[in-house]
Image 1: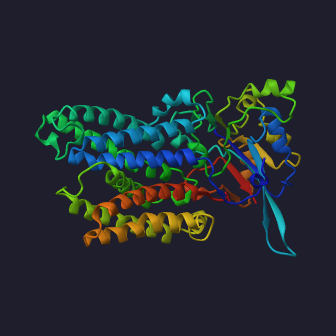
Image 2 (image 1 turned 90 degrees about the vertical axis):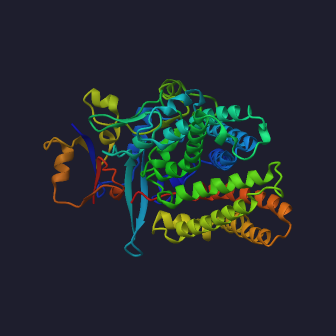
Image 3 (image 1 turned 180 degrees about the vertical axis):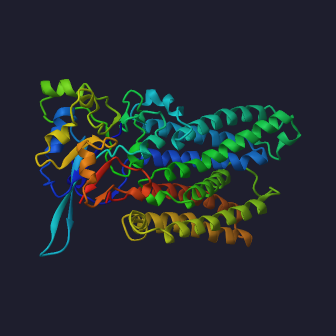
Length: 200
Length: 292
């Protein structure tokens, strides 16, 4: 079992639904994004266009974050998911500096989106996060246990995000990767071997 | 939320700021001072070194978000240089403290010079050797910590640990010059001056190597920050001017026998400034490469 993702850049329209769905499901406080859609401008007028790069933790096979973590808070499971154990994290930020994908952030402030204090929803969901710890995507590990897909993959309007077991040839992700298309993993030169592939 | 968070591109690191820079400055200077004072058996120098390292580790502690859980940081020495650093600093403080405690029992006390431990018991010599090894580690390990950050290519250079070590020794010289010592009557003053000169030249070579041999991409962007960007004044005036060129000139004048004592004091201050700026610019120039 090796959880992984394939993201079809031709299908991604940069709508940021995956970002919003992730924030809603995981109840992340202001400033904390477990995934983002980065914009890139390519080409020149009159053929200039924008390309959208949905990024989240790449759940690398050789994660740089796990290597530098001094407490063992960052770890990799047998199914390939890289997790942060919040109770062990001391907020040294070494993993944020080490991660080549800039997908980790420190939850260093308390408070919500509104000036009048936390809403009942915020009170409930923020209690799941420990202030002073590093936050990142965990492929919605709790949803996987229920047999569900990660929220971003489920919420993607265009079906650009495909998720599944990379070891299973019949999974959505394996089938997408077997198509005769150009596929790449980000910053492969660093030897991290990400579990997220991009189809161009 | 900032707009840059959603645009593809390179980003300057902001995770390790003033506290970490101060910590690296204090631990580097302190360990360098200890390394220089150890062979001379200069207990006051060693004590100041240990205090500086302890102050630096306090800054590192303050930089953590969850300080009460800091003890967990010794859990991963097998892979994490941060963890190794915490163990190294702790070992240094313990070894250094007890070594100084042994040393002040000697007849010459705090201002002792001339390596009294050589005539002391064997275990004391061994203890001093271990304390020296720990100090060497504390002086060099920040370079390895930075080198282990795969995202920032400017730090992934063999020059960085060497620079931190050389600069720590120079910082040690800096503080040593400011401590109450009878420099005029010191037999090994010419030797110290020569070592200082070699270290300054070596540091200059390492800095030139680090900046000239930078690879394209984020690493080159880091160098551009130093040479053309917002850090150019810190780099040219703070590090190269005050930290290297001026000490070289002063060392030259001291070699000619001009105003030895006052120049040594000024040089001490300049070395310390140079140590601070080196750490400041290396950390501030860290740029995360673009993901694509």
